[in-house]
Image (cartoon, rainbow, N blue to C red; front, side, top):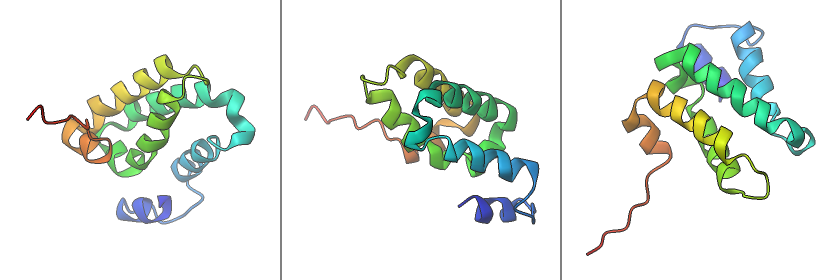
Length: 109
């Protein structure tokens, strides 16, 4: 997924610093790095902030994983996940955010 997105941004080589950074952050969500997930969420928060609207193309696919970590109370990552999701909403525009993570509001009918 990164390769396709980066090519849209004319970042032709997979070994660019940005491509390597995003791939490393994605890899950090593997179970063997579970103890570091809080730190990885902080890194993602900063990446959303620094990449701004570009993060829509580069990082939006990670929102599902962040949301999963947020709701797993055993992990204790709700606060840091909320901050990361807040940064995402602020920088990728709410409509794009909601396409990935809808509110799932029920119609009171």
